[in-house]
Image 1 (tube, one colour):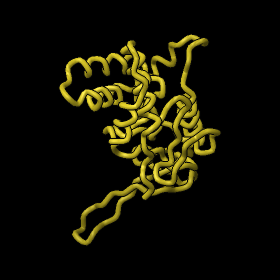
Image 2 (cartoon, helix red, strand yellow):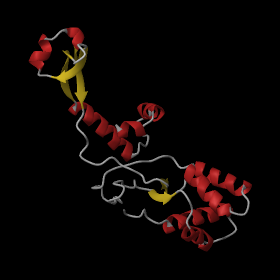
Image 3 (cartoon, helix red, strand yellow):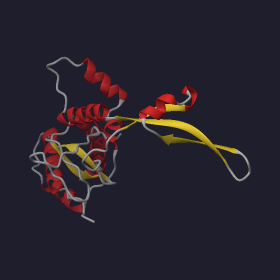
Image 4 (cartoon, one colour):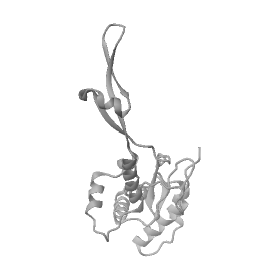
Length: 209
């Protein structure tokens, strides 16, 4: 289940330990709700194991779906119950290769990564800063094309959570130009914030296929 894969054990533990006043992202609430719903909607499938004799006079065993009455009469060592979960009504969310959802207002960890890249990089400082800030952004996923303000597309079937924007992993020329055109004052931190905002505004959208 895709939703379950996206919620790590560490994150699930954090959610269970957070006080009522803590912030839990709505996309995480939706993911947990879908997992709970899928569990409740799981239906039992009764199976029995039987064998037939093949052309070489060997036993060939296989599992077969049966009704509950036949299941109850079969040998306990050769019967089982499995559960099938209905598929979600929507398509699983897919972030295109080479793209990532990042916060519109960069997190402290992103600023730290950007500053470090700026200080150790050579000529292509803008590219290095952008790449470091994108890579250090937390992984975020969501799917709810009916949600107000969503940016659903026919190619990706994802939505951008509030405060996030989908951007390419690699800086485009237009985004680099946007950085250069951002206000440049005496405060380096504010200059970087302004450049980051300008780059995100200039970020292209995935091409429809």
